[in-house]
Image (cartoon, rainbow, N blue to C red; front, side):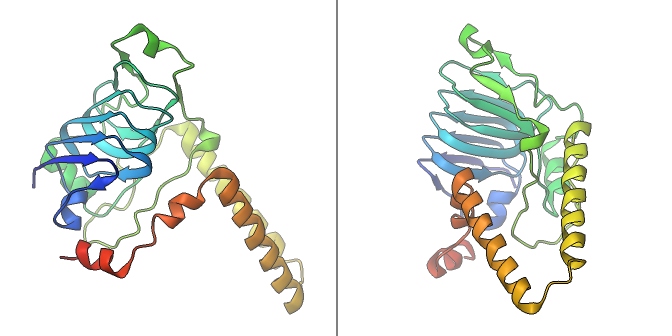
Length: 233
């Protein structure tokens, strides 16, 4: 299904959830702030303007942005992202999600995994080429994003995979987690000690959520009953 979709002022106008996750002709994201926008493949242009503190995740033929502030773009695109004027604090990063119908939707739009020019921006104004205005996300900052919905389909991994440096960082992080779990398991804690340790971990995790402002992302996943019913129509 192809459609034009406009996201304005944090409102995503859609009829069904499958439309939001399906293929689209073009998308404009305008005047949004403090939110994450996840899109299915966009056949032509994904344009983002006048947004602040927004994370955009999607596959598109062309990404363009203007007058954005502190926004992060996780994209897979065969063309160089276009920077118009007025952008500040832009972060470019690899595409880092998948859902089960993603490759089917990419085929509908004619988009493939190669070439992928997510990290090679093209500047329409001299100010945008300043590296104080944009940067590449470091592997140490990078985490994959999990879609919290179950759907039927064959895609079981990120199309095209991740760049080697990011894959290495993910493996190293996973190894640290496994080592930490093994250390805890072999510590021989009593039931009371395990309870105290669990409470300490939860407290530190909450502190980390607040410090890194990731608490907002978790809160955004909590839907009211009315919202769930509306999406399911």
